Length: 252
Ligand code: PLP
Image 1 (cartoon, rainbow, N blue to C red):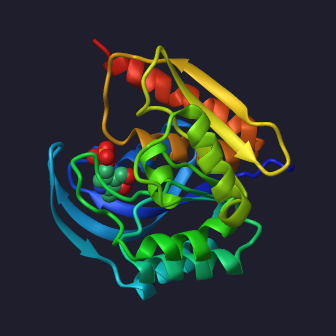
Image 2: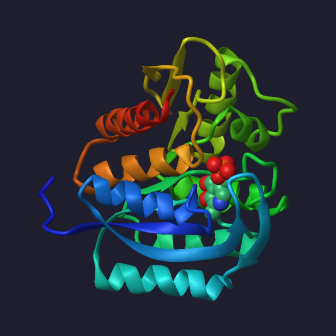
Image 3: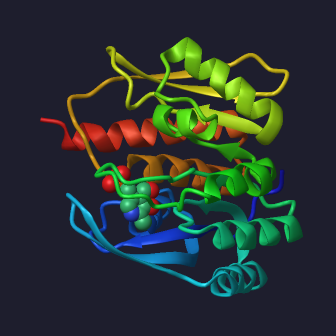
């Protein structure tokens, strides 16, 4: 693949006023990997690090408009999608991806905050599975999100999560990275699943540290490496290392 002179990641997501997650984290991550960002803001939120107190959705025409403007203006080499808030926004983002099939899209299927506030309305999950996930090069659910996406009652153990992932892969996704950050054990293991390929495991020592926005950081780091023309597996490995090093700096 030819190297691009000024690759950008188009970040599609919500603003977290605390800066702990959302587009602030995305831009910070992408910039530290040496790639520029452009934006389509899907929602404005009022948050502290403990709770989400207000959410204002962007209208879908505004989301699609921001995306189309970015794609016309900049050399968008990857798209990173986070909080979408509404089913209408899911449909709008899917429409723009369909117009740009050559730009790889990474979807972090943000459903709720750690504090428990819904960041995607309940009815939109099915729309995301049907209309958006199949268009994305990679979807990055954690164990809880994966369980919700397949309609399971609770988060599964590793073997169960791989079974759930295969189910999702067969019907709705090109590739999945099942994140193990919420599981237990000495290693934090993420598993890359692709059709007709063996799963690939990415391990890092589990650190006694917790940080908000790790899902945003991982998906953004992967998108930034893809934008630099990295292959998918390599970009995931570098993204995982990026999160590990960031956590290491915050660990006691
Ligand atoms: N707010 C926004 C805009 C987000 O995109 C996310 C997660 O992606 C969150 C809040 C939740 O972050 P956390 O679970 O770290 O609180």
